[in-house]
Amino acid sequence: MTTPQEFARHSRFTDPGEYAPLLEALPTDVRQLVGVTGGLVVHYRGARIPFTGDRLAEIDSRWAERLLATDQSRFPVPLTEPRPLEERVVGCCRDVTLLTVAALRQHGIPARSRVGFAAYFHEGFHADHVVVEHWDGQRWVLADAQLDQADWPFDTCDVPCGATSAPFATAAQVWTAHRRGEVDVDRYGVGPDHPMRGGWFVANCVLRELAHRRRDELLLWDFWGALVTTDDAVDVELVDEVAALLLAADEGDEAAERELAHRYATDPRLPPGARVRCSSPSGVDTLVDLT
Image (cartoon, rainbow, N blue to C red; front, side):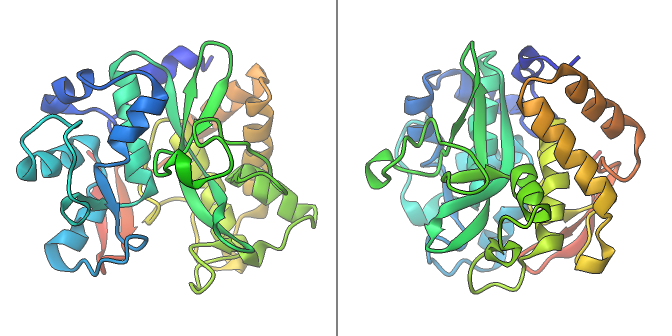
């Protein structure tokens, strides 16, 4: 059975390797912690800084150990020391979240990343997004490590979650609402001026949400198994089943949690296996060996 304590252990992606002491020195209070981890990464698009070449390639770092190695190559000081925006590790929401989850797990605090959509970056559009979820002893709590509380009207360390009116919705919530005809799925994607959006995109996010829940915290542009690039290629039945199990598990259904673990372990369409195809915004399109 999957229990909160399972998420207190590192995955192969959150394992900091030789940089563990850096994480051990960080605060365990989530509000203090995100003030640190949010200052380690600069968003490759959101910061509006034209990163190119080796700097842009940092968005494919994938492993926490590699992210920390890049940071320390520039700033061989504690993570709590400020970094100039343009010199931080180039990444995205997934990387800020990964480092936050890694820090919490390093302290034995159950934490995981959740894949979904944020309604707060663009008026009338829901951008794909990855946030932190940690166990506070009684419930799972969402926190957006990218946000400065002073800039937002909701609690950024206890983000309300739901498909139709909350600031954040999980991919499973959005897919289910889409299948019920409750949301316009074309308003969900990378951005309002970006072609990557719609049903196939949300379906992929459901499968990514499952992978992250099973502690395979892959990049948002990694492809494997049942992930597709067109609506007609979506295995609707599979995505319906996974989304329903994710929603049930979020409600505390232990049988659904066990079924998710079983399906992920036995259905070759769901886990990444030894390799994924990285179709990166950096221009890289190649197979990556995860071993």
